[in-house]
Image 1 (cartoon, rainbow, N blue to C red):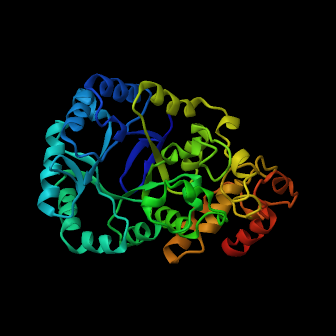
Image 2 (image 1 turned 180 degrees about the vertical axis):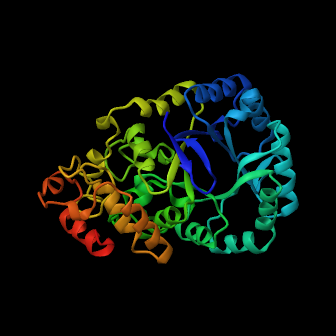
Image 3 (image 1 turned 135 degrees about the vertical axis):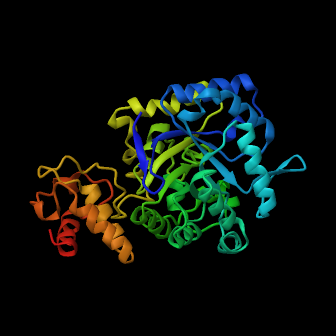
Length: 382
């Protein structure tokens, strides 16, 4: 297992973690097997947004003495009301279910306290001005949560929250299909007709700007919806017209800027093993360019997706990282400063390019790499 650092949180998490939502309604025996298979495989981050009491109790029992070996994402604002899950912005309800979380997990702290499901600017304003954020910040000051974050599916709202400066972590939905989507409501993400849309034309710039804002501020991303609720395994529903493998989708998520961990929802030991197979998969199995590079939505978009198909470079230039720095540098002053620092730290730079063009022959997306290297020299001076 590889581990990555959530910079502002200051913790090192497994690049594959366990999303626990599919354990809802399962027996303790099943939950115990799944949770411990994940931990035995090296996963050390678990997301538990569910407020249903029994699943919390069972996951807590399954962890037992191993609680100290994992980082828990617990959600502020996911509550249980009249036998149903509810998203709440009532501070007292939030307080009750954080207390409930601590009891059921037999712990006195939550590693990452995530303000739950902020998808609109109106809701973000309600969180920031209505008491929920103040409550979350107090939890952090008191050591009840060690890092503060939020979950979201909307890049515009999420970016605004990141730029407000209070978040250490964002849990965000990422896969190649979502990156293509225009701004649509969450409830339409899984409509079959959504994936039949013929207007996709490369990565949504709002999503790219969100990733860059996180990277420039050291805000780590943990990923949900890596598999697109299974739609991307189905060629009839995928916008790419062919199924993708778990390894491809995991690799795509992990190659986005600021991403530290992708949290895979598993309900069986076999599904845990399928996710962990990424760690021993070869480059060809992980490679997603064989799908995206032939799809009309991505092909010849001239947009780098950081797939590293252009490698190896005879000058040992990390072409994907140079492109990431250039993409990051189009933002504000903070992003430009972060881009310059990352670029300077590279072992080789755009100025080392000998314009051999081999990288451009390999690129599935028509990126003018030579021009990009020249742009890097002009922007960064080396």
